[in-house]
Amino acid sequence: MAAVTGPDFVALQVSDPEASAVFYERQLGLRRAPASPPGAVVFATTPIPFAVRTPLPGVDPAAVHPRPGAGVALWLHADDAQELHDDLVAAGVPTLGPPVDTPFGRTFTFLDPDGYAVTVHDRA
Image (cartoon, one colour):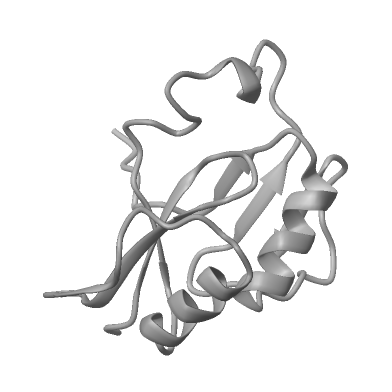
């Protein structure tokens, strides 16, 4: 039997991939990968590529309740979660609470333009 070895790619289905890509570039400092498939923007993240993409057929991100991705936890690593939090708050990005110290380092959660809750931590 073939076995799955783990996550290899993460993509959020968003209402406007270009607008979401600009958000992730400007607010989080992500860089676009040299090539992306049609309808998606892939970022040069490691060890797993991260992307924003047009929704798959039959998926309407605006119709998801209470917010897209409910039930799925997406965590991103940052060099300094507190600094990123402060920058996002200054830019008017909604957060779900102040940063806290956890076993994963300083941690907080923000909402992206489509309402996805994304958690950031800074322990490698």
